[in-house]
Image 1: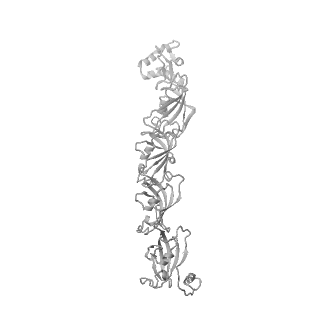
Image 2: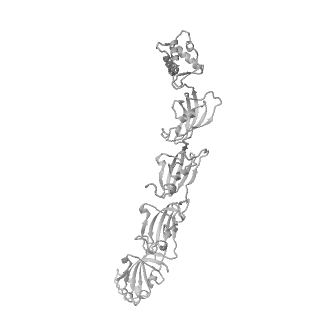
Image 3: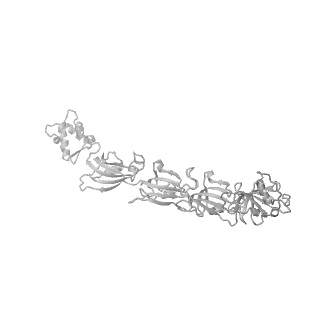
Length: 564
């Protein structure tokens, strides 16, 4: 029985007894007893290999050498005589992570001489081999795209700063490092020697959100020295990379208009105060903040350093209602430090913003007449009692105030409405319609008011429904032009030298009907006249005589004038 047949039987010796007298072995015998399911590459002549082995004598199984004992894999080149001839042949066609047993006859090992007292003459050698790595001097960085986002705004280039996650393994699959385990991206510049050469090359042309497998041969990685205890000498490295962020130090803020309302007559400038909603994300789409979640706009001045530099630039030239996407590089955001656990260092920020409103502290109330009746005999002014309809659409502020079907009533100048609305209602004719824009400093200011948020610009559509001319504050009746002189004879309608309440009431009503006098509007007429009469009836005898009226007029005080 020849040696090869004997060896095959020895493999089955646990099943039955083998008794053989082997003859000379003519070639290497290879038993591939553990082959990986996936084998992207097999050992060829001139390839370099890194492997572990146990070396034993075929005759008695005694160990003569082991890389495991030295805790250091063996490294060599195949097929160029750097190994014994039998191992040069026995390693060909091997896959990474394959285990094979190689039996080498003496004439393909150390022959009839042996070596160094370790290998005797004519020894048949058995090597149990585990292949860990394969590479060739002609190898290049291998890039396999695992996934790529549907859209890619830009790709990485030399001099860019990138943030990426990775799992780093040896070619055998053994993990040596992972950014995920540290819960922090790896951040670096490309093409400036901060990375191993293979990674500098492998990371080029990536999109944010792209996943790649980058296989780096040893001479483009850590070469003969390896790296500490993590990466052995001459190790091929495999990086599974997720690109999280990319920017260039020369990048400026980029702005993409998503929605611009028609008829925009004014845009934001430095010094304006703006209210806007936003979603803030990183380039990979991860949300780090949102005003919508708080149900509250972000309010700030523009161009005055209250927000990050990039946002100050991006908020220029906006219309009310406009939506835009803003991409801000780190040097115009939070830089290398970031913000605690909220925003990592060197993060590019993406804001999708929606402008709710803006104003300038110097803005006046803006009034636009949309309809004016042909006849306008009276205009509203201070002290007038008016009825008006209004509608406040949500185009400017976040809530709709609609009172168009049920008119509101107010006295102008009585501080019953906000200053801006007061101004917008003055000088109107009955039937006139206006559009009024009121900045916060003429509205509710920094305070909330019901559904109206703080610092809101208000927009009103107004229509004056009814106008009753009024009297100054503190007055109950005023003359239109000059009153009768002397007054008492005019009041004494029956000439009996005394004026009871009924006669006084008739006199006042006649003056109002004749357009010669005006009562305070909005108050019961009988009540006003009764108050006026009581003020003149000094002795409370139920009638006014000339002396009482004369005394009141002679005082010339505001009280006396208010009384009549």
